[in-house]
Amino acid sequence: MVNKYSFHPNHLHWLSLDVVAGALLSHLAANRLPDGSTPLNGWVTVILGLVVLGIYTLDHLLDNRKPEQPRTQRHAFVKQYEPVIWRVTLGALALAAGLSWLIPRQLWEFAIAMVVFVSLYLWGVSRLPIKSYRQALKEPVTSLIYAAGVWGSTWFLGESISWESALLGIIFYLLTVQSLLLFSHFEAVKYREVFNLARWLKRPNTMRILKGISLLTLITCLTVCFLTEYRYVQRLSIMLIAMAAVHFWLLLNPEKAVSDERFRLVGELVFFLPGLVL
Figure 1 (cartoon, helix red, strand yellow):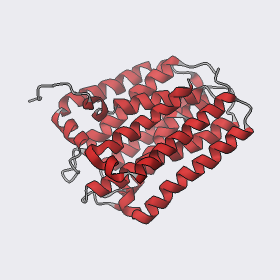
Figure 2 (cartoon, one colour):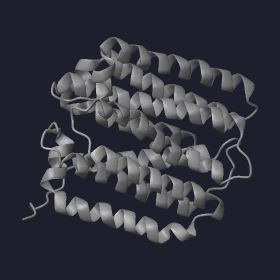
Figure 3 (spheres, one colour):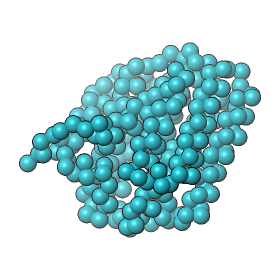
Figure 4 (spheres, one colour):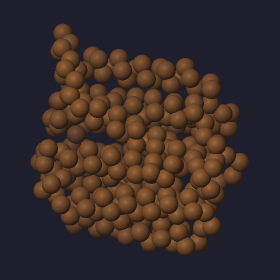
């Protein structure tokens, strides 16, 4: 029997709608590179949002099938309204598939490759025991899927790829890794039974990687600001630096971040920042 639904603002977060919004804003910002006037494809943006929603909710649903999965607030919400969320997930993916014929021809090969890769990933992850060392691969692979869909897809929409877009795309991927590794770190602190990348790396290595990504982002984005001729690229570079700065702040304030799982909400809202350049 399905529990009677009662709306709470946190449900938007637990349903990953903030992740979807962040993905769309980051995609639109990346698509405008390098001069800020590159035309947008509305259908690609709509399909991306549906796919991100479908993949994230499907991942949570599959996680909940593992009895040893830690009971986070998000997992508890997904468990409580599982039948409804299954319908939302399958509906989003079906609608995305139905609209896929509207995407540009040059994006088809990339889209098919992503569908195959993501399907294999979800199948593989769903079969992994919670305590498997292969769980440590989840964060970097998830980051690659996210960055490829959000940023990499824009490389197939234009006639050429600017060096600024390629370099900032790599930084965006690293920021996605940093975000998920940060989540992994705080989960390892709050839930002792969890096994993830941060637990595998151990705290000293995790801290070095997180700080290293912040430093690399700062150096790379400042270099891009000095070398590019486009003001739009400079503004977007500053937003990527701001993303790294928020991650660094979370790292320095673990007591505030872990409380009520704020690190998830703040970490996902970080991906709204590229939208400020639009």
